Length: 165
Image (cartoon, rainbow, N blue to C red; front, side, top):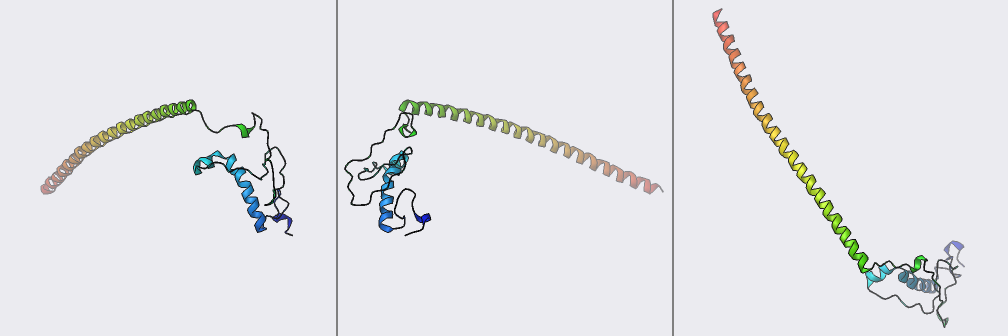
């Protein structure tokens, strides 16, 4: 007998017994796959039939898994109330899809317009910065010319005053 930590809480047999573990895995597969429609659409398969299996529900205590070879003449029927999450369909109607498409289209256009306005603002700032740089460059050239003139005038004055003495 395996220790309690190796036992499944839903099955009275140990999980790691090879014949039983395959049976357990195969018995949970239809429940898992049929409860998740996204798996079915991704695989493009129909949900497997639940013959000889006990259906598990979130509202009922788990029941023991049937061993291979045991006959079950009728599958267990579960009553699902309309407000139960199992009864809710994850699929949208065509009207909901169209409304969502229109909403996304409008949001996309609004976002594109905001990006376009932002790019135009950035472009205008770049243009203004380039004009400012050109103005600074021209002022720099004027100042360099002025400094050169002052330096040459100072040197000329210094030479003239040096020659007099």
